[in-house]
Length: 256
Image 1 (tube, helix red, strand yellow):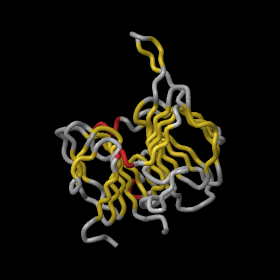
Image 2 (cartoon, helix red, strand yellow; image 1 turned 90 degrees about the vertical axis):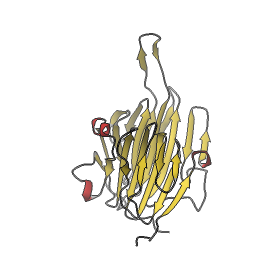
Image 3 (spheres, one colour; image 1 turned 30 degrees about the vertical axis):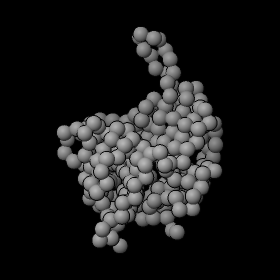
Image 4 (cartoon, rainbow, N blue to C red; image 1 turned 60 degrees about the horizontal axis):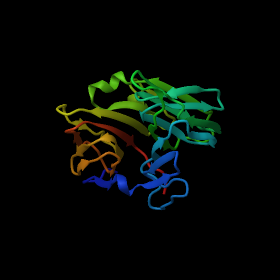
């Protein structure tokens, strides 16, 4: 049921749960690991929105996942992925990656990248990425993996479907997820461009990954800020300095 006036829940960057263990600086939009708040476990079908910075030469050793659609979006640097299905890949800005954990999969994620600079030679750099977890439609599906370069599509500045299980975006989304009620969009907004209009959806999660943007009904959102909208979208976003924004459009929610 669509509300007469959508509810806008603003979550500021500094209010997120934080995990800092030296090689990992992670900020969690929802309950994660030992951080638990029963009132902050999900929005729609989105359970995890982790903003991670991993130091050079470090990363997550092999670990297991089950019954989860995991989408990884790199903002800076590159991330090396290896899993028990035999997939090996490097994820970098503009490349979308999805892993369906299904009946069970083990994988590792490492910052093994290096950058060549003629003035200083080879050196390593941190990698920053956002990892998002969405519940699948059904448990115990066959695990799967997909990645695709979509950097060119983002040049237009509007919302681009990056990962989706919705039929509406079947011909447009870069990668498919096993949830027919959810779609992830990214916009690389530029000053002076037309306003970005959010999808009309019962549940929206807006995350400012970099830069700053203004959202109708809220005002200015800085890097790391998020807004959870319930009851309808259609709001407009603009930017004066540039922003990369991740938007989850969701037409269902986790059962309470």
